[in-house]
Image (cartoon, rainbow over all chains, first blue to last red; front, side, top):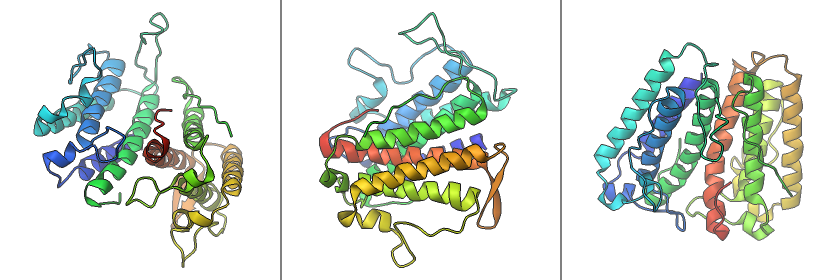
Amino acid sequence: MLRAWLDYHRATLAWKCEGLSDDQLREAAVPPSTLTLLGLVRHLAEVERWWFRVVFAREPDVEIFPSDGAGDGEWRHLDIANVAADFAAWGKECDAARAIEAAAASLDDTGRWASDSNPDQPLEPSLRWILTHMIEEYARHNGHVDLLRERIDGQTGD
Amino acid sequence: MTSELVWPSHDAPEREMLVAFVEFHRATLLQKCEGLTDAQLRQRSVPPSSMSLIGLVRHCTEVERNWFQRVLQRQQIDGIYYSDDDPDGEFDNVETANVEEDFAIFRETCAESRRATNAAESLDVTGVRRGKDVSLRWILTHVIEEYARHNGHADFLRECIDGRTGN
């Protein structure tokens, strides 16, 4: 059930981005917010990577869109972004996440996450928590996506 | 009107965790409404969308009533804000809304949802939606994603009213 809800929201994001030009995907359509559809796709690629590959599967933390002193890379330099490559990167992270989740023995299995502010007391979220959090994280961003898309070309619905 | 956000514990058992995520989003919606005038709460600040923050609160009241009273508890109840003749009344009729009363109804409805949830023996208890059984587990998960999506709407509505972001 959790898997189905997460895939529903992944599919919703993909559908909401369909039929738009690269410029429309880059448009910050709800100012003063700087969020864009492309930025959200790149953000969710990083979110997928973080929770499934880094926290749960304990892979090294290597950003897809490298950050620098000025902030998170996924939100920046969208004007020179390769839109097709970014969507492919998101799709690849979704596939990797599905494979990791499918290989897990139980929803009670835990990942590991030592935050910068509290490195000595790592958190150990269960796969159940990660999936539930991913659903609500995607759903909230899809709320942003709803209003961005409506502003870009009037399309609504889910 | 204060609402405290508590991030759901990473290692809670399933039922406790689902309830904690629902509570997180109920509190988030109230927090997004804090410190605004009635006129700001009624503002349709992301046109052409007809949504407003008070419209979302009224809609989430109907969502709570639907899933916890109509579906889980199998009660025959009518909408508070909408009808067959006025299907989107919770969003459409905000100009004449009694804001204070709408928040009171929202809180009361959330309390009723908590009672309905607590009364269920397990997450496998079923209600009925359109003739089909749905478990409390499914209902709670759906309510989390529905609230979260509306809180995404609330994020933008609030930012366009006074610039406030974050939770």
